Length: 138
Image (cartoon, rainbow, N blue to C red):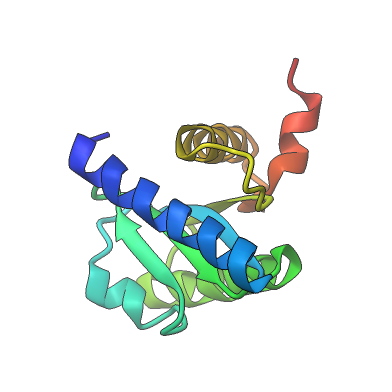
């Protein structure tokens, strides 16, 4: 990953941690993969205005579901997958979600999301997973 992109993601994570600690609000981080190139404008049509997202490369986006519990982020991810499937007329999207934990560094958050996404790609029936998929990995 480009150093500038990683630094932007790190700032986004640190802001979420600050907001969570200061105001006791929920947040959830996710990592979107889409096989076809997905523009910022296209993705912006399918997420809430309060959600923040940043492109990592032409197929991946880091998403910060602001003020959103883990369960609500899962539902938002289901809605996002539905809209992307409908828009592109395919089923090539998948989303990794990690539990919000202010003790995790930004590097750990990113690495866990990538690891969850890799597990999703190994299972053709799974499109949205959270850290529970990592429990079976030794």
